[in-house]
Length: 300
Image (tube, rainbow, N blue to C red; front, side):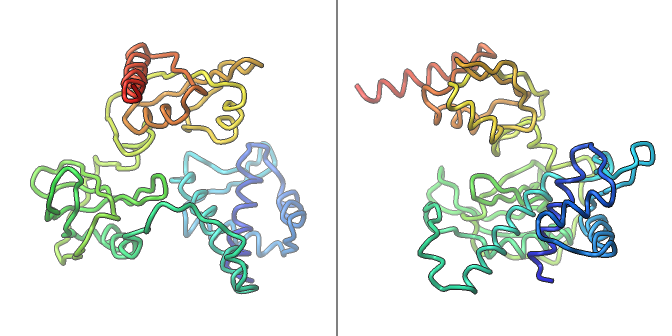
């Protein structure tokens, strides 16, 4: 079978076992069949085993409930894996469609955000992260006139708004730094290795943030009120994993998140205009209000 078939089966198995409904093996097999995958028991067992070995996804049989479930306590980075499956499935579907017909591109419109620079650096940077190699590169900072030379220890590749970023630490001060990969040039993977800091968990830095500006302080409750129409979009595509609905009526959708409000979050709020209102905390209400007042002044 094609790689796309395998990826699709992975996604379906996870979908069926990640709801704490404890489906039996037969129910998992029937679920796959409903989506066009008539496969053997051995194939399903192999898929479950490969997801455990290759990606750390622990799909476990629960004797008490007589069914299967994803043990999230033993599974690392499942959200990243689900995102990977989405990207992989989309890429495979587009590839197959292009192979079937060269006219496919006439019927697909990609978002135009300029040239996607730096994608060729993802593979060597990922290799450097895995092998704990220091890297050297020039990076263009929009606050400076000239690119600056950096030597850093790479830890993580992070995606945000269709752009990739390198999360790293500096050699001299061990400070955490984030670099836009599209502004990196003359990348060199050095022979110098480093011992990763066990105290640094780069993915955890962003757990309580939206975007790239992180804070190590405790997250705080943020409440937003949306118009009923915008609320439908927010329910379909949550702004943050901590999002919870407080009230959902004909007049508004009220949600609460536990985050560290940063620049990117305030930009997201501002983009929604009059479809959203910040309820709390008070300092954030004032900050957004001042920004809206300043924007209005620019039109006078």
